[in-house]
Length: 316
Ligand SMILES: [Zn+2]
Image (cartoon, rainbow, N blue to C red; front, side):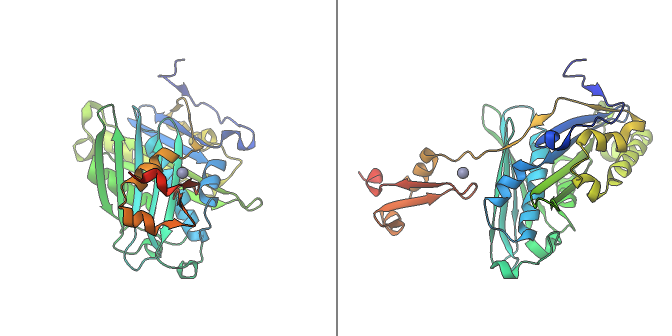
């Protein structure tokens, strides 16, 4: 077996407890022209979400967004950054929500609210529209390659959930038939956040996919999609079920092959030098306005880390 060929998943593999957390697992369904990714985030997502005091519904949507971002990031073939942003309607509780993944496996994210915590629906799994409003948008940006290639796709957030919105991104922007499931929740005992995601894409032979694919290929895709959609939220979030077991349950009849997993860690790219560059671009008057008690304190929105600057650093 080589890393490129992967290994057939011919029985469920039981990994003890949380050993299989914080990773993305690439897989393929043999003979179906279907490739996929499954992601399981434990301490990684808990650390990012609990660095802020969000109402549960906002924390839950951020956790789902982190799972989606990790799924997309695990598709990167060269070094790069994937950014997923959700912009809320003017009167929606959430103003802005962002997560990014940078290779090899660094994940971070945060959300900002329009309203106070009391205006956010209390349910942990509130509907997307309740949090971002009917006119929200989902923006997915890929920065990749040595020449800094950039690609951006925008879709309306008029879907019942984030997974459905992401599916429409793939069908509109990339024209790859894609099916996705996302789930996030808190552990009933420990209260720690966790998030899971599973995604399949149809890559028909000879480059023909979508409506141009043959009837057999279309039927295969419909079947793969139905199988994936049969996974229940409780199954996805069950800490005892590792990704291999879930994939085995769903696809073993069709032959599923797994590849080298990608480790994911909560890591922020902020630095003193980056924040200094941002402050250096402010006008002297704006810098004076944010100087309090003889210093400028800047806080990273992603991880909450604070940096202290002497205003004299920016003079002259
Ligand atoms: Zn940071």
